[in-house]
Amino acid sequence: MRVEAAAVDAAYERLHGVVARTPLQPHERASAATGARVWLKREDLQVVRSYKLRGAYNLLAQLDDDQRDRPVVCASAGNHAQGVAFACRALDLRARIFLPRTTPRQKRARIALLGGDRVETIVGGDTYDAAFAAATEQAERTGALMVPAFDHPDIIAGQGTVAREIVEQLGHAPDVVLVPVGGGGLIAGMTAWLAKHHPSTRVIGVEPAGAASMAAAVAAGRPVELAELDGFVDGAAVRKVGTHTYGVLEEHPVALREVDPGVLCEEMLDLFDVDGVIAEPAGALAPAVLRTGGVVAPGETVVAVVSGGNHDVSRYAEVMERALVSRGVKHYFLVEFPQEPGALRRFLDEVLGPDDDITLFEYVKRTNREFGPALVGIELGSPADLSPLLARLAASPISAEKLAPGDPVFRFLV
Image (tube, rainbow, N blue to C red; front, side):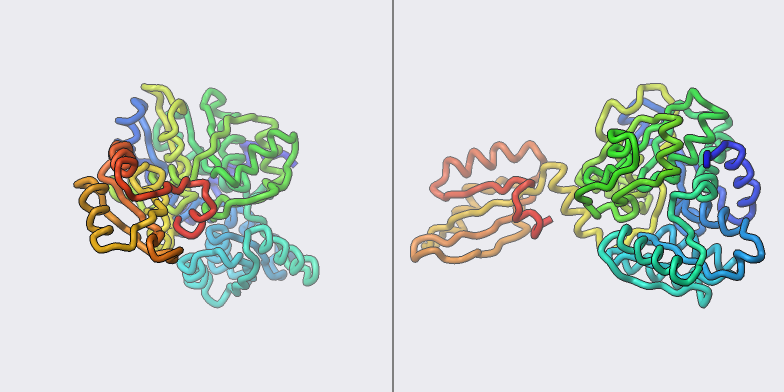
């Protein structure tokens, strides 16, 4: 079943008064860095802090009386569940929602708050795909109505209303829209509408490295499962895109770009520290791609969709660590200290620079009476301080090995 622009327009009218008309704000930092006129579409300020309400409500509001008598089932990494919970409470429907164990507690609490006694949550499995399998089994066994997170024409049409809002708020179509991609519902809906009404607008889909399932589908000519999945960007970590979502992009091809998790974390911190925007990892994907260069041209009007702000504050320590490593100011070393008085003091005085700081120091073990290896984390004043640090290390009698980000031990550090 094709997704037509007319369905997006119908969804737009259906959602009037239900979803928030989220702000479109100038993004001064990215504009200065790129020379383009960059705007942020703040779907993180939606009623449920993500665009997912648009699709969920659009589907559920169209149920007939027979369908309304059936319970609703869905699987979600958190944001779709909040949309379904809100919609079910507003439309007086009952829902059972399946979540992977990786869903942050903050999102679980929000689902319970939004759905009230209309929603039951079931947590299990390590990925969205595991939750989806459990929800599908439940629907098949009980006859419940499955509400897909992205792969349904009504879901896609609802998500596509973001594009129409952007054009109405700008007063004209942008030259470029940057859209985060997980299962593909948002980019499919926006692309379907823009292809009809503003075909000159370039759509660029942004996927997390390690979870680029749409790029894999395009390469294979059909949706395929990723053999491995990096779940850090939990809101966009989907092993296989939808048949309907892929179908739209097959008809209307778009450019696809990947963003490394470290670069994404840099953007999350800058959004928070500089711009005052609290974005979850998936929410920061679109603006983060501007850091990779060559995405937009000076003078172009660019809109990046900040797709969600349901971020668990407990994850900020990991986000900061990944960002510091990505920026080149955080490094780890295995250092063999001579087991003699003053060895650590010499390391501090002769090896560390004036702006360097030890953030981790753990003795691993003593191999003999003469040496003791330690795991040392060092935060530099700037990336340029690394070469002088390595030179001082080489000139010292202390033996040290710098750990590379690809080293397996990084799994325990970052």
